[in-house]
Amino acid sequence: MKLIVTDALSAAAQAAELYEELLSRKPNAVLGLATGSTPLGLYARLRALYEAGRISFRDATSFNLDEYVGLPPTHDQSYRYFMEHNLFSHIDLPHERISVPSGLDTSADALAGYDAAIEAAGGIDLQLLGLGGNGHIGFNEPGTPFELGTHVVELTERTRRDNARFFTSIDEVPTHAATMGVKTVMHARAILLLAFGPAKAEAVRASFAGPVTPEVPASVLQLHPNVTVFCDEEAAKLL
Ligand code: F6R
Image (cartoon, rainbow, N blue to C red):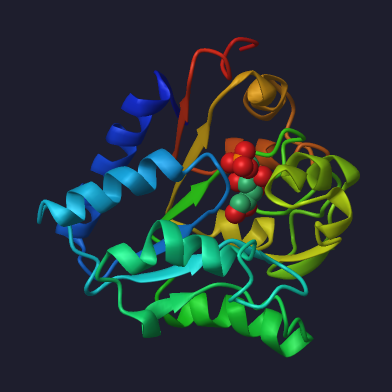
């Protein structure tokens, strides 16, 4: 695992260079994408690189990590909406090659179909991850078995509280989400995790300096052969 401690702005710039390098080497790369506050700087950088003509997503494919159950793609707190607003509507990634788990159809067929579609696309080349304050990746909450593919999870109280800032009240935060499983994430050829701020410090310590355990979902990344982690000083302070 490569751990780089730098400020969030420089992390976004360096992470964006990984996309520039990947897409120039493999224009039809398969990208695993994430939502939340953490990747916003990276997405801003990718938009800028695209506008400058330095990067194109024309032949790429994307799969997002997760979606709230019950929210349609048009809901302004759905992850599909987030992606449209922060990335997809600004770049040339063709809409027919964009996938976000459905928050409306969470049938067993739809969930298994998500993993099958990733495989059919050739597997994920670069999976982007944020880190939950409780060590979650995607919405794989503590205790989730490492063997699961895309599935529905019940969100913990902590995750709902952490995400309540985007809703009018905590009661409006969905109770469940559809998420790629740890198995899905671990199948990616390379993984890029970003973690910024003091609220992530304990999760960073437990994930990268503690034992590998489903109680700390991100700790599984210690078993992956190609992981790059960018942290700022505050997130890395307990390492
Ligand atoms: C988002 C996701 C989550 C977030 C995590 C951190 O698609 O899968 O695991 O990455 O909850 O969220 P932020 O970045 O808002 O601190």
